Amino acid sequence: MSIQAINVRNQFRGKVKEIVRGDVVSEVDVETPSGIVTSVITTRSVDELGLKIGSEVVALVKSTEVSIATL
Image (cartoon, rainbow, N blue to C red; front, top):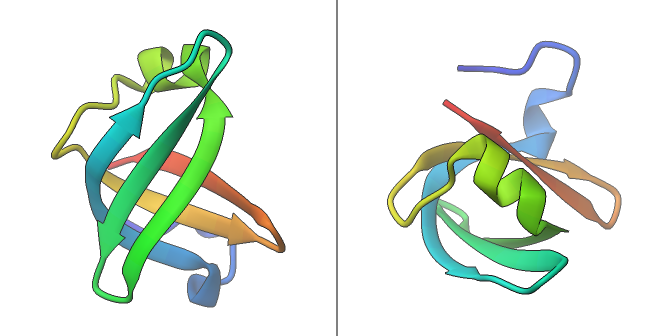
């Protein structure tokens, strides 16, 4: 899968390694071939994306921001 509107250099395929849930925001660690990428996203987004340990995702990097998309 490739998100077409984003430059391929800014996409890292991987699997969710760890989720540290908070009341409002959560940390999502994604294990990629390039190493661990960590995203801080809303806990609501974690739930709506159905993220779990082992979920295959794409980490989308924009400057200092990392977004998550499910595969």
